[in-house]
Image (cartoon, rainbow, N blue to C red; front, side, top):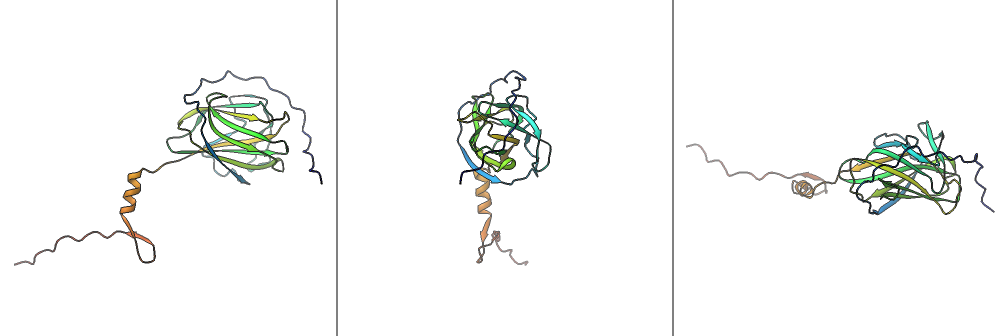
Length: 217
Protein backbone atom coordinates (compact mmCIF):
# COMPACT_ATOMS: atom_id res chain seq x y z
CA UNK A 1 0.00 0.00 0.00
CA UNK A 2 1.53 3.39 -0.95
CA UNK A 3 2.31 5.81 1.88
CA UNK A 4 -0.14 8.73 2.26
CA UNK A 5 1.04 12.04 0.86
CA UNK A 6 1.93 14.88 3.23
CA UNK A 7 -0.89 17.39 3.69
CA UNK A 8 -0.69 20.46 1.50
CA UNK A 9 0.63 23.70 2.99
CA UNK A 10 0.16 27.27 1.80
CA UNK A 11 2.81 28.45 -0.70
CA UNK A 12 6.02 29.53 0.93
CA UNK A 13 6.80 33.24 1.03
CA UNK A 14 10.44 34.19 1.34
CA UNK A 15 11.32 36.88 3.83
CA UNK A 16 14.07 39.41 3.29
CA UNK A 17 17.27 39.41 5.28
CA UNK A 18 16.66 41.25 8.55
CA UNK A 19 20.21 42.01 9.67
CA UNK A 20 23.86 41.68 8.77
CA UNK A 21 25.70 38.53 9.75
CA UNK A 22 27.35 38.51 13.17
CA UNK A 23 31.09 38.68 13.78
CA UNK A 24 32.63 35.17 13.45
CA UNK A 25 33.39 33.29 16.65
CA UNK A 26 36.77 31.64 17.12
CA UNK A 27 36.96 27.89 16.81
CA UNK A 28 35.46 26.99 13.43
CA UNK A 29 36.44 23.31 13.51
CA UNK A 30 33.65 20.76 13.30
CA UNK A 31 32.92 18.74 16.43
CA UNK A 32 31.57 15.24 16.82
CA UNK A 33 28.09 14.72 18.18
CA UNK A 34 26.15 11.75 19.52
CA UNK A 35 22.53 11.69 18.40
CA UNK A 36 19.50 10.56 20.33
CA UNK A 37 15.81 11.12 19.71
CA UNK A 38 13.14 11.53 22.37
CA UNK A 39 9.54 11.47 21.22
CA UNK A 40 6.82 13.31 23.09
CA UNK A 41 9.09 15.45 25.29
CA UNK A 42 7.35 18.45 26.82
CA UNK A 43 8.46 22.01 27.47
CA UNK A 44 8.47 21.67 31.25
CA UNK A 45 11.82 23.33 31.97
CA UNK A 46 12.79 26.69 30.49
CA UNK A 47 16.48 26.57 31.53
CA UNK A 48 18.64 27.30 28.47
CA UNK A 49 15.54 27.54 26.27
CA UNK A 50 15.52 29.62 23.06
CA UNK A 51 12.18 30.05 21.32
CA UNK A 52 12.59 29.44 17.59
CA UNK A 53 10.66 32.58 16.64
CA UNK A 54 12.93 34.79 18.81
CA UNK A 55 15.46 35.17 15.99
CA UNK A 56 17.88 38.02 15.34
CA UNK A 57 17.80 37.40 11.57
CA UNK A 58 16.50 34.74 9.18
CA UNK A 59 15.96 33.70 5.61
CA UNK A 60 12.96 31.59 4.53
CA UNK A 61 11.26 31.19 7.93
CA UNK A 62 7.63 31.94 8.81
CA UNK A 63 5.80 31.97 12.17
CA UNK A 64 2.54 30.19 12.99
CA UNK A 65 0.52 29.19 16.08
CA UNK A 66 1.80 25.96 17.60
CA UNK A 67 -0.11 22.97 18.93
CA UNK A 68 2.88 21.90 21.03
CA UNK A 69 2.83 21.76 24.83
CA UNK A 70 2.91 25.28 26.26
CA UNK A 71 1.30 26.92 23.23
CA UNK A 72 2.68 30.06 21.65
CA UNK A 73 4.33 30.12 18.23
CA UNK A 74 6.61 27.91 16.16
CA UNK A 75 8.68 28.48 13.03
CA UNK A 76 7.57 26.65 9.88
CA UNK A 77 7.90 26.39 6.11
CA UNK A 78 11.58 25.51 6.50
CA UNK A 79 13.36 24.04 3.48
CA UNK A 80 16.85 23.48 2.09
CA UNK A 81 18.99 26.62 2.28
CA UNK A 82 16.89 28.38 4.92
CA UNK A 83 18.62 29.65 8.04
CA UNK A 84 17.86 31.40 11.35
CA UNK A 85 20.33 33.38 13.46
CA UNK A 86 20.19 33.76 17.25
CA UNK A 87 22.44 36.28 19.00
CA UNK A 88 23.66 36.16 22.62
CA UNK A 89 22.81 32.49 23.17
CA UNK A 90 24.32 31.46 26.51
CA UNK A 91 26.13 28.12 26.18
CA UNK A 92 27.07 28.17 29.85
CA UNK A 93 30.40 27.37 31.49
CA UNK A 94 32.81 24.45 31.21
CA UNK A 95 31.40 20.94 30.98
CA UNK A 96 29.58 18.67 28.58
CA UNK A 97 27.13 20.57 26.34
CA UNK A 98 23.85 19.01 25.22
CA UNK A 99 21.89 20.79 22.50
CA UNK A 100 18.25 19.93 21.76
CA UNK A 101 15.83 21.03 19.07
CA UNK A 102 12.05 20.52 19.02
CA UNK A 103 10.83 19.56 15.53
CA UNK A 104 7.73 18.36 13.67
CA UNK A 105 7.34 17.24 10.05
CA UNK A 106 4.63 15.98 7.74
CA UNK A 107 7.06 15.67 4.84
CA UNK A 108 8.65 12.28 4.11
CA UNK A 109 11.45 13.83 2.07
CA UNK A 110 13.53 14.53 5.19
CA UNK A 111 16.61 16.61 5.73
CA UNK A 112 19.11 17.78 8.34
CA UNK A 113 19.17 20.61 10.87
CA UNK A 114 22.59 21.93 11.86
CA UNK A 115 23.51 24.27 14.70
CA UNK A 116 26.68 26.26 14.07
CA UNK A 117 28.50 28.91 16.09
CA UNK A 118 29.39 32.37 14.81
CA UNK A 119 28.70 32.02 11.09
CA UNK A 120 26.85 29.70 8.74
CA UNK A 121 30.08 27.78 8.17
CA UNK A 122 31.33 28.12 11.76
CA UNK A 123 31.98 25.39 14.31
CA UNK A 124 29.41 22.59 14.21
CA UNK A 125 27.63 22.37 17.56
CA UNK A 126 25.09 19.68 16.62
CA UNK A 127 23.49 17.95 13.63
CA UNK A 128 20.08 16.27 13.59
CA UNK A 129 18.41 14.14 10.93
CA UNK A 130 14.75 15.15 10.55
CA UNK A 131 12.18 12.76 9.13
CA UNK A 132 8.43 12.28 9.17
CA UNK A 133 6.98 12.74 12.70
CA UNK A 134 3.31 12.23 11.85
CA UNK A 135 2.33 15.81 11.06
CA UNK A 136 3.33 19.45 11.13
CA UNK A 137 2.18 19.64 14.78
CA UNK A 138 3.35 16.19 15.96
CA UNK A 139 6.41 17.18 17.94
CA UNK A 140 9.55 15.31 18.93
CA UNK A 141 12.79 16.41 20.59
CA UNK A 142 16.20 15.70 19.04
CA UNK A 143 19.22 15.87 21.35
CA UNK A 144 22.94 15.84 20.60
CA UNK A 145 26.01 15.89 22.83
CA UNK A 146 28.55 18.35 21.46
CA UNK A 147 32.33 18.26 21.77
CA UNK A 148 32.60 22.06 21.53
CA UNK A 149 34.76 23.98 23.99
CA UNK A 150 32.88 27.24 23.39
CA UNK A 151 31.30 28.79 26.49
CA UNK A 152 29.33 31.90 27.38
CA UNK A 153 27.23 33.97 24.98
CA UNK A 154 27.57 33.05 21.31
CA UNK A 155 25.81 33.64 18.01
CA UNK A 156 24.12 30.41 16.90
CA UNK A 157 22.88 29.62 13.38
CA UNK A 158 20.18 27.03 12.68
CA UNK A 159 20.66 25.73 9.13
CA UNK A 160 18.26 23.63 7.02
CA UNK A 161 19.72 21.14 4.56
CA UNK A 162 17.90 18.70 2.28
CA UNK A 163 18.47 17.03 -1.11
CA UNK A 164 15.06 18.36 -2.27
CA UNK A 165 13.56 21.82 -2.26
CA UNK A 166 10.22 21.45 -0.46
CA UNK A 167 9.49 22.28 3.19
CA UNK A 168 10.61 19.47 5.50
CA UNK A 169 10.53 20.75 9.11
CA UNK A 170 8.91 22.97 11.73
CA UNK A 171 10.93 24.11 14.78
CA UNK A 172 9.47 25.18 18.13
CA UNK A 173 12.50 25.72 20.34
CA UNK A 174 16.18 25.07 21.01
CA UNK A 175 17.73 24.22 24.38
CA UNK A 176 21.35 24.27 25.57
CA UNK A 177 22.45 22.61 28.82
CA UNK A 178 25.78 22.01 30.55
CA UNK A 179 26.75 19.11 32.78
CA UNK A 180 29.71 19.97 35.00
CA UNK A 181 32.61 17.51 34.89
CA UNK A 182 33.85 16.42 38.32
CA UNK A 183 37.56 16.74 38.90
CA UNK A 184 39.59 13.54 39.26
CA UNK A 185 40.81 14.48 42.75
CA UNK A 186 37.19 14.99 43.87
CA UNK A 187 36.28 11.51 42.65
CA UNK A 188 39.27 9.95 44.41
CA UNK A 189 38.48 11.81 47.63
CA UNK A 190 34.91 10.52 47.55
CA UNK A 191 36.10 6.95 46.91
CA UNK A 192 38.60 6.79 49.75
CA UNK A 193 36.17 8.29 52.26
CA UNK A 194 33.67 5.45 51.79
CA UNK A 195 33.60 1.69 52.13
CA UNK A 196 30.95 -0.97 51.56
CA UNK A 197 29.36 -3.18 54.21
CA UNK A 198 28.52 -6.85 53.68
CA UNK A 199 25.32 -5.94 51.83
CA UNK A 200 27.23 -3.74 49.36
CA UNK A 201 25.92 -0.45 50.77
CA UNK A 202 28.33 2.47 50.90
CA UNK A 203 28.95 3.64 54.45
CA UNK A 204 31.30 6.25 55.92
CA UNK A 205 34.75 4.90 56.63
CA UNK A 206 35.45 4.60 60.35
CA UNK A 207 38.22 6.80 61.68
CA UNK A 208 41.29 5.11 63.15
CA UNK A 209 41.34 5.25 66.97
CA UNK A 210 44.12 7.21 68.61
CA UNK A 211 46.62 5.83 71.15
CA UNK A 212 45.22 4.74 74.53
CA UNK A 213 45.14 7.31 77.29
CA UNK A 214 47.30 6.24 80.29
CA UNK A 215 45.39 5.89 83.57
CA UNK A 216 45.70 8.59 86.17
CA UNK A 217 48.31 7.95 88.89
